[in-house]
Length: 419
Image (tube, rainbow, N blue to C red; front, top):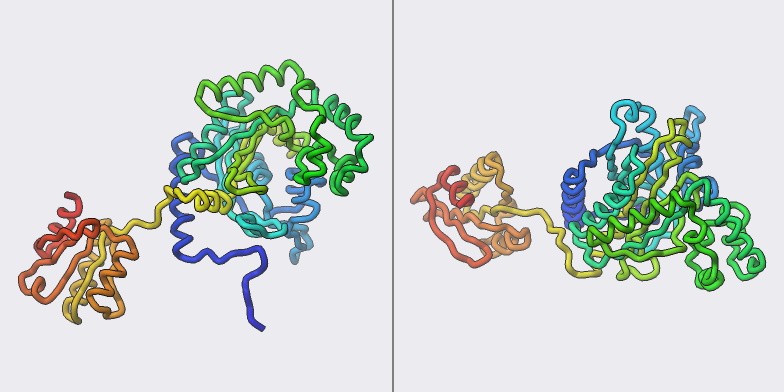
């Protein structure tokens, strides 16, 4: 039997790994700029954590989780998303007692047993933020601005922001009731999933991607007319801050989060180039989640994005800013003697902080130059018998093929690179 990778997983080969690493570098640099600090949590947790934090009625929990019983009889699951683990760790480690306001981010693998599609795998990389402790509309606006900057910095140019308010525990019941009254006579027109959602979590009907359900919802009531004064004021301030920050957005009255701990602002980042599955990330305010996990009443907001979908969108745009690993130089040698000298020079240059490579296959000058070009080396150091006799090396710039001789001295070579 030929052993192959599991359906929905992917081998990330060296060329692609370099792209991921470059994107991760951009991610961490942008997070640091906004004051977000990284937190790392276990890949598996108690299943109950996700049932409570992700929601019993969501497809993620009801259909997609990888769950198992360990040798101790505990019911565990591979994490399908990051937020529940972050909130669990936040409370378990008493971070709320150490600082009132925390800015946290995560990056790692998540697992969902869903139908694999382009850019959507069963094992995937997700990053996200959690800003915990502030109810200010300014932090709502900041998370959107940060998300857009990360996407732009990775290389995604065509990004749309859709935004809505889902109210709070005071005004949400009246909206649910008006939506229920609207849909009650149209149940036979909804898909089977939405018929089930009508009884278990009516707001999830607004998320349905089926065209028939979208048609039914065309004239459905929206949150806009059901928000209480506090929620209206909060949302108005968020929109005003975004406008004053020159952030374009679209109001989407059917953008919702089905769980009760979500409050007020919700949003999604959309890449039109991806087609039907166009969301590359999304977030919202979840002021009741910390309390749900047994903590005090602490407001919070965050978002999550899938790295594979972002990089797929960047690739489709064809304007990727993410660059592969940079090489300063490639050392070309001609025979056994110069090859040994080249190896020793390679190690010394690396000690000086240069990113260097050489040939290990005793290939021809032409083949070595071709390899240097493939790696994207900025310079080539040529070490032949004549150079060795004169205690020199030939330093060639690959961009324009200009070259010069310099002393065979690590300090001299480094000096030329800096120049």
